[in-house]
Amino acid sequence: MNQNLNDADLMKRVCAGDYLLFDELVLRYRERLLRFAWSKYGRQVAAEDLVQEAFLAAFAARESYNPSFAFSTWLWTIFLNLCRRQYKHQIRQPREVVRSSFSTSEETVIPEPSSSETPLHAVLKTEQFELLTIYLAELPEVQADSLRLRFFGGMKFTEIALTMDCSLSAAKIRVKNGLLQLAHRFSEDTTSEGDVS
Image 1 (cartoon, rainbow, N blue to C red):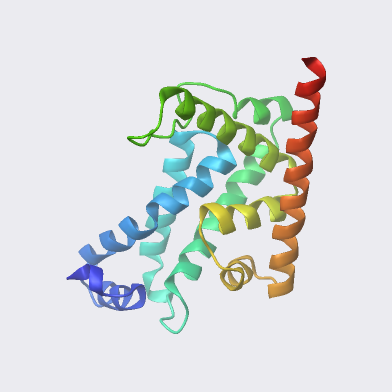
Image 2: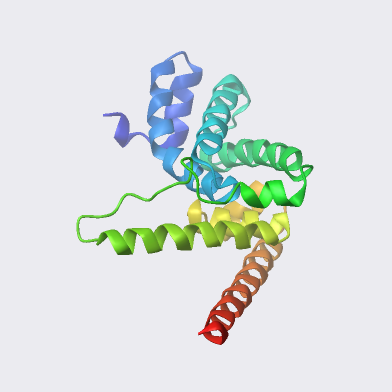
């Protein structure tokens, strides 16, 4: 029954005191928020803590939600602000410490293989994800976050613009330039690997 309600209707009922319906919103957005946080911090525990904090902040601020705007934009804005605060705190650390947070450890995110996926393919996918998190960390934060919102959050450009408080054209440019820089970075690695062999 709750699955038939849209986000705004769920939030109206949550604000009216039906607090348990907030769980449905958590189920709808948790995985996308986690993918974003994993790609930004590279550590599952840190990502899960941040996502939980975002949902707690959203629930605490539920009365500030305006149903004339998309719930997703409101939630992502809260989440992105938390990420920025965390990122500023993390970036104050020496660069070696920040980069090492993306190295393989017991906290590294290991994607669950699908039934048709071989163990080797699962490992390669994990390595690609770790490499991507490192490359994203090298981009300007606004570009990297735009890419994360687009590809991990599954957001449209209009939603990215609202969430990041920028124009639609700026959101498109950030994603485009970020993709170009990532493509260049990946091609550099491919070329250097070819030189070694």
